[in-house]
Length: 208
Figure 1: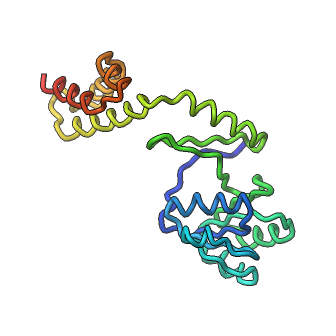
Figure 2: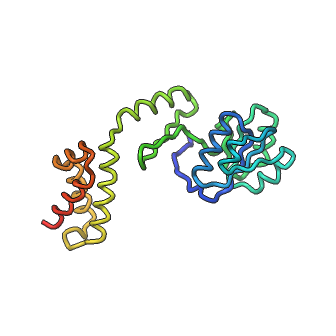
Figure 3: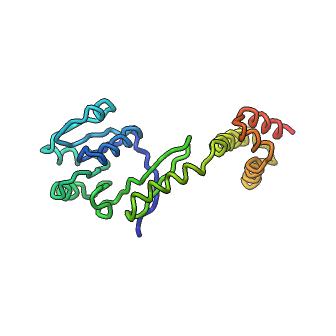
């Protein structure tokens, strides 16, 4: 298979999008949201993307902008042009919407619930199933799960700031975090959406 999931830090990285159809626009928006510098090569300029911060450049400058980029996304219906850009982009991170296996980077179906990010990749077998699986996952994740995430982070920070002999052992800290995860009182607080009382409860437990 060869593919492995990774998260890239894209802030201030240079991304070139060749093509501004549905796929190109969607990927441009994603990288802009991540803080990247996005340049789009397309015959027509999308005011929506310009408003978001994308720059538009003409096709005859493609070689210059491939050289500028850290990552290249090819998303046009012109296979000859796609092949030319792919050749220019050798040695760079390359995502091809037309032939994903001919690039070295996949942009998977991704969504967030709170601070939790989910990515689904079906090895190119079924984009439709990627969407269906996304819907199923969204139904399973509850608000209390996201609150538990916040509570675990809160507790980890307290343990780091107030380490004593008992909590200086990593295994003991991990065991304590599992204890919080399974605490019935905390579960009830979170079911009620009461994160602040859950935090107070944890502070009391640590004092005791």
